[in-house]
Length: 284
Image (cartoon, rainbow, N blue to C red; front, side, top):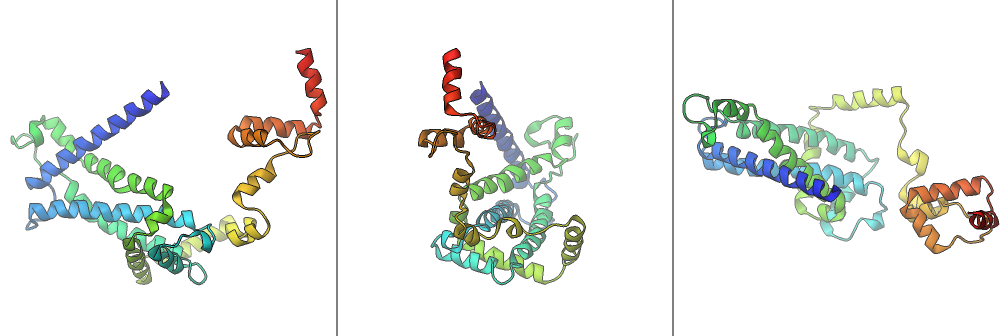
């Protein structure tokens, strides 16, 4: 039932996206959008897909950058552009990552300004020019811009974020990532949004925030202390009383099932011995 419900939502979402694209492209090809006068319809269509790709790339870059931020240098792959991107991003005292966030936002806002013009329909209901001959009420709904929002959310944002979160290093291997990182850092350097630094500093002081490295150290420090991610999970598993070493099968089960892990922890905390379990099993 759960799988069927999942695929129902997938099909429904794909249908909504397809319908939104069909309506928007019909408006673009017929010149019925709020695109500026004098811009050919073909150019408007090209701008639509080009800007969607740019916004999607910037959304994915944000996810990929934070995914590799906690990795050691040796774990950031060997692809030339991935290495160049990471070297630029984490250079010096680490201001380039938040600097990218500021420049990225400026770039995304600029793209959205044009995308809104491209995707917003401008068809006056009641004149017989409704898209696909829909009713005046439906055309009024189309003109509100919700279809463009659906396209931007799915096609220009979430899809790219999912890919970047699953394959961050492969995503960073794209040369365009390095190019747009440079562009975003240039936009941040213009100072248009530098007030964000002041507000962020005030927020940090008021909330008492500190960097994660203060609590957990850098990736290299954690490795030196034998606190890698996988080992940290294994060390956190409590040992059963009566066992000098936890059975591998049990350790695997605990890593897969949190309830089993919690049960073993409670046994250790209450000093329950394995012999007590055998006696309990006999009584049952």
